[in-house]
Length: 486
Image: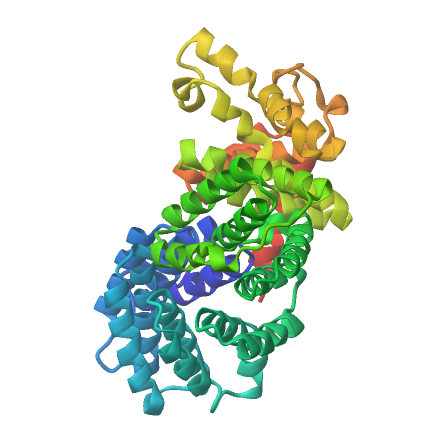
């Protein structure tokens, strides 16, 4: 395989979401010590994967390597694009000053040396950092500058982010009419339902600032309804902002303890993200002058708030006690969804599978950490570990999940040969969704330590015994189709 082919295959696997396979191809390019341009592409790809997974130190090291091997004759736009990515990683690491200075310098260079598309991206990212700094007037100027020369394609691609950030700035500056104008625009151009959530949260904040508690509750209810349908697609920072708004609503209903639970959830999420400036801005809506209490409680809304806070606490409990949980969940769900899509499962069934992929291991929070991390260390540890599917179902029962989700969770450790747990079922008696989950889980757990190739080789050996051969075969078809493209 030539370096050019390896770079192209890496991009192809990356585009399909198989990030560990993509990284292996790019690592192969680097080991060939080939053309510097190809090595830059490989390092850039590795950095993008690390950034997508929140591994900021790894991402920064890879971007630094890409810049180090960049040929001196390289196109200036290529250099600027890498420098922009580097700045965004700095921002995520908390090096906001460095990120701001680099993006500001890039924005000045971009006026003459880059394409409109890169100018738009640099400007939008600079504005986001300015908002974190609470430089709202400067962010507004930056965003309007972005719109002066973007192409129709860029306008379609970025208008949602542009309008949302303008709405955020005008809310912060108490410019209600302008805020309403841009948030309405953002809502109208949101291409998917889950993208409406950040806009609805900002509209709820706007309503609170204007003393319209009822209006804020209405916007938050709309956001909650979308969250129940699309919670896997909603980013942690968006859930943090929603939690803060829901805390204010609980306070308005006189539910102080419930409000504190939402506050704790928001603080935990912002802390995990290192977004303390955003946390400070969101807490500004606690000003008592903006809070109007309802004369009577809405029992249905309070019940929904209780369900929401329990859902959020459950959702992130495993991430807190088990750092690898986010990675495993992401890869597991991607593999399971790829199989379900190949089988042309309906949306509702795929959503149930996604919920199981995210929540099945919640029971691990209720067992000894040594048993969780080393279940085979002793008979007692193994006995504890075997209980976690049942514990997950017990912890999730109050959330009102569909019975199919709980069935998948209850049986996700069963094996076709009858050697699984908790019931020792054989292939005919294992629910399809649980068997698909098991295949996806072995892939996710394996790639965490072994990478794509070694894991996939081992999975084929396990087909028919530990794993259902039908679903391993479907995964084989998926991988073959990715390799054969182009």
